[in-house]
Amino acid sequence: MRKVQMMVKDIADKEDAHDTMEFYNIMLQQYKQIAPLVKSPRDAAIEEILKVVKDLDGVPIEFTEAAHIACQRSLQIKYHLGDILKIDKNHKLTLG
Image (cartoon, rainbow, N blue to C red; front, side, top):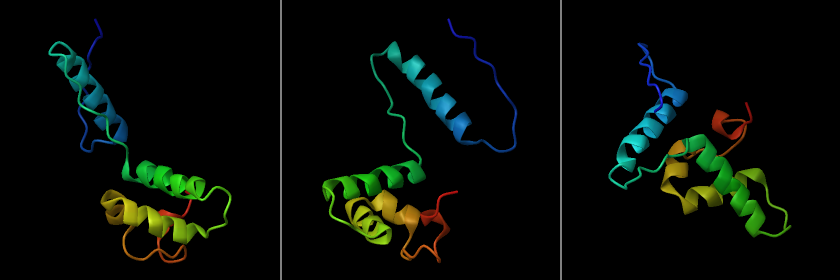
């Protein structure tokens, strides 16, 4: 059996949330249920933008246009990226 260790922190980070969801799933396994692990909004946005580019099968598209299409496909991505989809005005559209 896996040893569980509790940590006391003022702020929970992404790793803490992921570990908690994994632990919750271990507990649910005895009831044959699983709670899906959610992706971060940033990871979901990256994946959807990549899908947009891939769907175009080599047809060129500007990054901001791909982001706009990704926002149309997913409300989660729209809420994460916001309404201003210009690289110089939206830090969420930059790498880093």
